[in-house]
Image 1 (tube, rainbow, N blue to C red):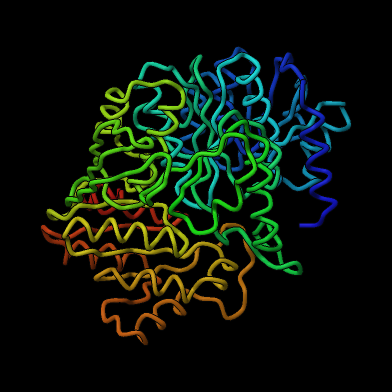
Image 2: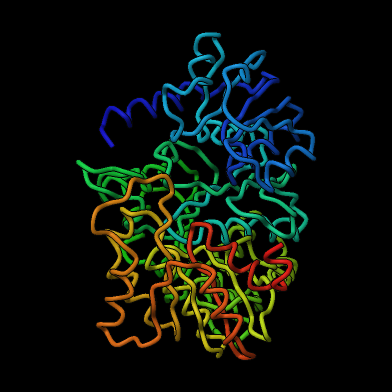
Length: 484
């Protein structure tokens, strides 16, 4: 990403500072996406007229239509007629017919992240406050937990989440309290948002390419990405960061109020007396020298302990009662595609998880091993560039599974890269001594194999950021239902 792009993005977001969202008609391109659909719901709840379009119908577009948001399938210049604002992500080509028509008609074109910034600033201006959750891993779960705990404590938060939250039956929540937003680092404009409380979960080299090759990626270097994390944190009134993540403290220092959470001694909010069982995690929370109480979380894994600890800390900072926070976490049902329990197959538990890079995969498998079951993973690598960069680390992360069935790479609109293939992962695992890994180009073979061999005591995890989730549903349906 060139410096001029940063300057343009800064100017774009700065131009909207102080703009009151007084217009009434919004048209959102890509409205079937998890983030854009959440924005549409929040806008409609505030009384704006909202329409949208997407290239394909989906469960989300059907839900939006049922909620009174008209959704057109396909892009057409006619969609912008009568609109005040056209919302599009950075992924939309500059020569898109809707964008061209909007500019020709004088319709304001607003980027998705800029609109999120408007919502966050509005919450700040209203005195409710706002929480922005950023990091390479754990954003969706942490954002969900914060919103659920604030709601459980009676603080009535608004929320923007990059996943489906069962407690809200959706990816957005309307409320009069603090606005809790998942802030996606894959969009470079995130660094120019302003919030009351910035929560930084971690920072790693995801969505990073090279200065000469930025296909399907957003940052030319790790240093550039981490500078963006630091810029986002610097704009907040206070920063809450994970003390367990190496080097993170150096990225976020400099604010008047900088707080930490984690398991390390010296963390402002610390998890102690940690107990793990196959079905949950239990720990006590210290705020400095004060013991707030105990949390029982119905999710396995060290990463989920840290995610929930961030939620406890945020809730405490906003004055929530700890007992109500702990009760909300005890009943937390997880975010969609984040260790989501789908059902059973022959007595085996079937889980779906979004893990798609080495750190996420390792964390998910650490939680899987905590259950004491035989861990069987169906893994779909995501993006050619990411696979090219991380295939050896992915192989290492997957070594902890008892069985790994590797699907083909999910391109995610990328052009294939010569020599980059899922078999790089399986071959590396075999070379390192794993005897339960194989490449499976035919998904029906995967389904047949698991139907024939699944048994009680197994844990089957469909894993990846592509469409591998569909297999979890297929596995938990009767064959006639799965193949009508």
